Length: 444
Ligand SMILES: [Ca+2]
Ligand SMILES: [Ca+2]
Image 1 (cartoon, helix red, strand yellow):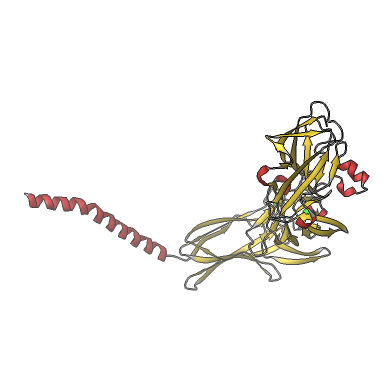
Image 2 (tube, protein in one colour):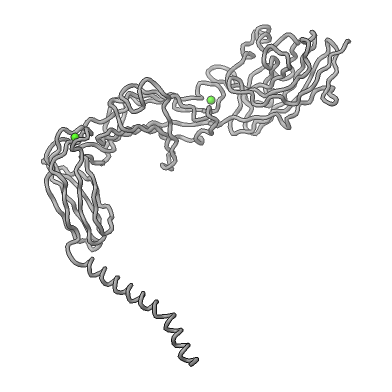
């Protein structure tokens, strides 16, 4: 009895597996038999013998059907009356099966067309009207070739290429770093010669073609896909707080495709240098106020309120700054505008994109009336841009700021608090309310 029990248990365990194995063998055998029978290419058809490829929705495409019994490379091509051959598909590897594809008279054999604004790459185009011989040709792994042919007529085709006429970008070297100088943005312009279905403008990395940065058009008089003049003002994304594409020389690519399938591509070079979102901070969020004790500075009328602080560039881009230099004294009634007039130095006026360290108080009429460069000349790099001297706190560098306000007049009643701020002028107050103190003004 124990023996029988063992035998039954073996049967129970193995019998179903054996059945499945045999079934699998049988199925595999049937499959092989089926594949081996009949021609490689069969049931080839075109749904019509004439199309009008002009995207009017009427008879714009023909459906091509074919079936394969074995894996093969498939080509579909069209020969015109003059014997020119145009490929729609060229030696594409295909598994056995039934295929259906729509054809709208378009072939994508890239070619370059010279224009008065430079070379234009034609990516695809609608073939000219005429009678064509179509061929579906297949080649299997062993080199056996089979084909089917027929005729198709193209009429009323839209063969007009869309063009991005006079495609231009200026300047070609671009420094998107919000320093307020002219090269913070580039302008890109072209005249689109016809309405299109899609338009794409992007920067493409020179070696890694898949690395693309798309540029969107600002809303304008014409839609991006409409015929007409288009211009873009591109800042690399920094105004939206994004890092711009990494420094490099890119291809600026414009691609347009119309509804019928005509498509072109134009390219220009665009170099990004010193691109990046600028970031700086007052080190430790700390201002060293002279004679401060427990956040209070006691002063008499006529005394000076003095401070020092360190500003660090924490970004990958140079930070532009402008005077007055650290060490400058302001009288209480002065501000950077009156100082610019008094010293006849317009560089003290607010320059958008330049950073300064400022001191503010709670009853001020001018926001941060007292401002200084974010470092001393020896902390900075001097450059001459467009004939003008400019000063930059370079990445990773620190600038020493210091100054005094002569309290030679009594501040408005209610003035209690004073504090510092780091100002990216014309952009934002990056750091406000730094190290606030209470200045108590007593009698001398
Ligand atoms: Ca049509
Ligand atoms: Ca710039």
